[in-house]
Length: 393
Image (tube, rainbow, N blue to C red):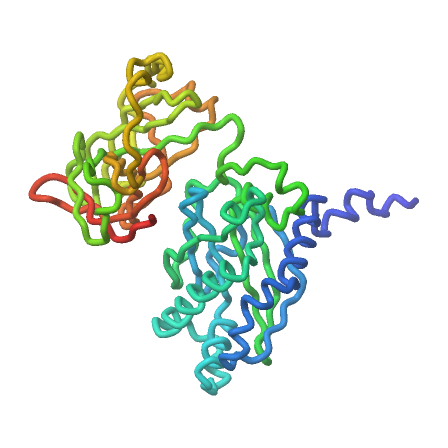
């Protein structure tokens, strides 16, 4: 070999690198897109007059790429898994789809113009209907537990528009890119999702049943903490919970405005034995509800007593009542955060923690850890409350 010959490492430096895991994900994504369930879920698009759509094979990148590329971004929330994901569509594809559905002939010179609010509205409808179609057809790509209720793709739309995907608090991300052609127009579509969620993409059924699902962004050595603003008692049960209802917050120490809350709240983590650990925090000024500052040490609770030895266990059985009529206390959560145990041990007063919620987003209303409703923070005179916007019963 001559002195001018390139070393083997130099020869490969300019080539793309693809791990075995990324290659497996590409194959699974392609198998999902070519499968009968997803084809039937999107059959309505052809009936609506959309011209032929052709996808190239998917490409997987182990990072969030092209987040600021012009186009349209549909951001989705998945409350059951406490995570978010999004897909982005390049400008020419946005135009081509809308033009095809509306029967509009766009001049070639206008093909690169930015998307418009009208197109955002059309794509919002497309996204909502596509999510419904995927769920109805059982075409979810994620195999989270093996049961139908575990695998349901019950993500909901957050917003559709030109704003880039907000990736704060999601940890490592994966980008899946497809080259797409709609009629004679070429472009690309990208899906951004947490790396831990990508692990559950089209997992073979045999392995899905043996895996225990966990929230994306969390790892085995992490703990899940809820930012609790207060509680609201419902003595007549959840059956009385309705959209539009206003819930006062008992024990709340919040102040300020709904779009810029201030004051103190607790980060709460429930242990495996039912005990709760708490960290006192307060909102960081100017963060619009996204950041909190540690205000006290981790409080270890006393271990709860064994309920089986309680005198209550000797009482006669209570009459059977409808679960929706049983008295409950609702908890209002203003965000969540997953804290690795190593960071938890090093937390000090004054340290800032990033929550997964912005003040413009709905708060979550839970009962015994289960999501039952969402709502918006409001002012009731001078105190914070919640107006219920949607109920999940």
